[in-house]
Length: 314
Image (cartoon, rainbow, N blue to C red):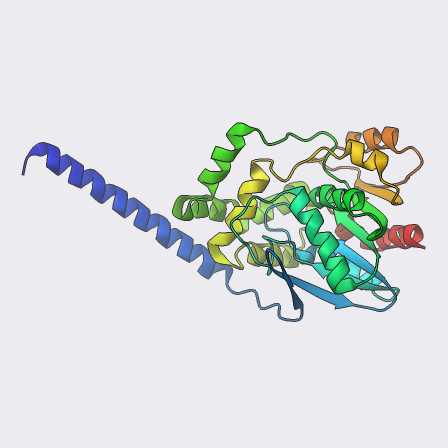
C-alpha cells in the first residue's frame, strides 16, 4: 500500500471517527434532556404541522404567544395564565418549530407565523380575540393584525422586535442551510441549547434579578428545546440568520387594531430606546414600563403585568 493511499485512508478514518463522536454527542444531548411529559394540552392540525396548545379559564378569549428565542415555549406564560385565567379564556400555544409542536424543515418567517395565528384564531378559538405577543413573536402578531384584519380585537406587545433589527441577506441563506445539516447542524444546535447555555441566557438576558433564576423555567425551556430531537434546528437556523426578522414600523403605523406596548426597562437584547421610537410612530397608544425586568416582565412581575393587561383589555 503506497503512502498516498495510507494517508487517504487515515484521513477517512479520522473523519469517520469525528462524525461518530458528533453522533454520540447528539444522542447524549437528547438523553440528558429527557422526555417532555407535558400531556395536558391538545393538538391543532395545521397545514404545516401539528400545533400544541392549552386552554384554561372562562371569559373572553385571550391568545398568548411566546417569544421565539431559542428554547422558548408556552411555559413562558405560566405565571400570566395563573393571574388572568379567572377572567379570560386563555389559549397558550407552542409556535411551529418550538416546544411540542411540529418542527418541519422550512424557512420560518414572521409571515408564516402570522398565518398560523390567523388560522389558529379562525379554527380553534373561532372568534376574534385579544392577543399578547412576547418579544420577537411581536412582528408576527403585528403582521397578522395588518394582513388579516378583524381577527385580533386588541393587541398587547411585550418589547416587540422589528424596530431596529438586521434583515436576512443573500448570504444568510447559505448560513441557514449549513445550520440545517443533520449531524453538524444538530451538534451546533445542541451546544447552543445545552442546559448551561439555556441557564446563561435566562440569567443574563431573561431576568434582571439573578437570584430569581427560576429553575423550573430553565428546566422547561431545556426540555422544550430537545422535544423533537434534531428537527428543532430548523427554526433555530431561521432565527439566527434573521429570516424571522421584519420591519414593523409601517405596519404598526397603519393597522387599526388597538395596541399597547409593555417593556422591561433593563432589556439588554431589545433596548427600551426602541420603545421610544414606537412612541414616535404611535403617540396615542398605551405604554407600560416595568422596572427591574428584562425580556420577561410577564414572569418577573407577573401580578403587575396581569393588572396592566386587564386594564388594557377592559
